[in-house]
Amino acid sequence: MEDRVNIKQRHWVYLLLHWTIVCVISILAFTGLFIHRPFFSLGTSQDPVLLMSWIRWTHFICAAVLIETVAIRLELSFFSHFDADWRDVGPSRKNFKALPEAISYYLFARNDHRYWRKLNPVMNTILIPIALLFYLMAILTGFALFQGTFFWGLTTTNQLFGWVFNVFGGEQTTRTWHYYLVWVFAIYVAFHVYFSILRSSRDRDNTFGSMLTGWRLVPRKYAPIRGGSGKKKRKAGKRPGKMR
Amino acid sequence: MYQTAGVSLEEALIEESIMHYDVSRRDFLKLCGGTAAMLGLSQAWIPQIASALEQAAKRPPVIWLSFQSCSGCFESLAKADYPDVATIVLDIISLNYQEVIMAAAGTQSEKNLDDTVAAGGYITIVEGAIATGIPEAMMVGGKTSEEIVGEVTANGAATIAVGTCAAYGGVQAMNPNPTGAKGVSDVISTPVINIPGCPSNPDTMVSTITYYLLYKEAPKLDSKGRPKFAFSQKVHDNCDRRAHFDSGEYVEEFGGEEEAKNYCLYKMGCKGPETHSPCPLTLWNSKQNWCIGSGNGCIGCMEPDFWDEFAGFYDTLPNVPVPGFIGVKTSTDYIGSTLVTATMTGIGIHAIATAAKGRFKENDDISEGSDD
Image (cartoon, rainbow over all chains, first blue to last red; front, side, top):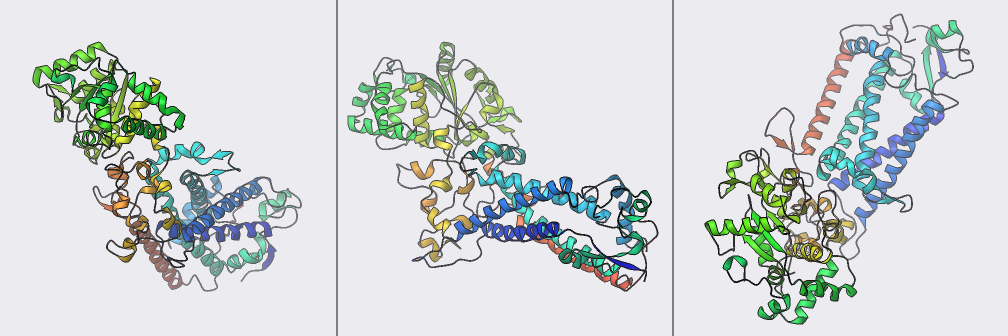
């Protein structure tokens, strides 16, 4: 086993945002499934609990939190002062080039793989775009179905998002697409968690644990040093002080 | 009573008609009050509505065209409410052509139609879908439905499409739509007031016609061409079982104890949350009852494509076509759970293969050349 170095790779703000999104979407999935088909009831007919109202209320509040969180995450990935990571997250030409190699490793067509300092090409070119598309779909169809008012009644979503129904071909079809999102989320979580376990057990770099601690055990030759990260950066010596 | 019967009431005032049909002044004002409420006007408007109806000395001629339909919408209007609003409305207007009830036949009826079209200034009411795919499927007097509706509406003052068939194509437009059934607004370029429903609600029809008589223009329409005064709210929002929905009290099965308690029909596939309609307010059958009141969920008959988009009517979400299998429909739950199961199985197989390959063991398979 080669020489390893423990580095602080994930900023606590990003970890917080990640786990906020996880919690919020989990609540949204649960409440959404309940709205789709109410599977339990509370109270009695004499003393009913406004269950559906509260579940829907929770769904809307969590949707608002999700939109806020995603917006903050996107903003930070471009403009943050501690880790503007838009170069490392999301599809890029470099990642697309490396994608066949990465996939062939996962499909056992080759036995070696490169070490990816942050996210690997599969995550960057497939899962991240799916996640962004997921947010876009969820927000558009969600607002269209919400049909309420927001900003203290200054705006009604009917006027702003009525066109979404035309795009999807009617309110009922929009509802169906909104419902598919819960299955997309389930499949996404399965892949995402499996890949992170796979990587941590294979590369022994504590990828899984780094989502809680932020610390990752990176091979020394790929570890960022002050003045840059990786081999190329070390030579160039650019971007001083940036935590990479 | 009708022009086609040869007895002209052309100059008759509505007041005389009311006397003739033994409708009391009180009943007549009740109609005006109901119409005012429907149009969202205050009680102060009742005298003006009454006067507009009474002073309609020259009654606007109406041509009622029937195409691919069951004539249910006309039945709905003709068998309308107490007091006999249909009678009043049929005398407020001058119904020059209506295939179901006109006495004239053959060339005489066609002449009535041609004369009215030539004179202009009439209201065209269309019932039933237009056959565009197989035009021969719907012909009257040797002309296709598309030709007739084009000729008649071109010279008219206003066009009203009553019923979901005339508005959006209706049941005969169901996939694969062999006759190419389309709504009126899809085949003509002039504006159309859609009053959908299967059948359309008589109160909405009366109110729309009254609105036109009052203002000489179409009411404000929503994005689907429907009068906003009637179709701006959802069945769900005005449903008398809404409290049960909010409390999480649902009918679990037909014939169950929850049904006897009039609980919400959401789990039985009620499409009230997606349907814009005044049904809970106007009710049906002389304000006796409505679909949900009789224990059946709303099937959304006032919405475009309800025949495809909302079916099956007893599922919370309708079934969806399976890509790659033409004509096969299945539930969204089934599609979703199948995909999740397939994913989990795939991951399990991959994990076993990875373990068998020895990749979970400590190894050094990181190749040279990093990511940057």
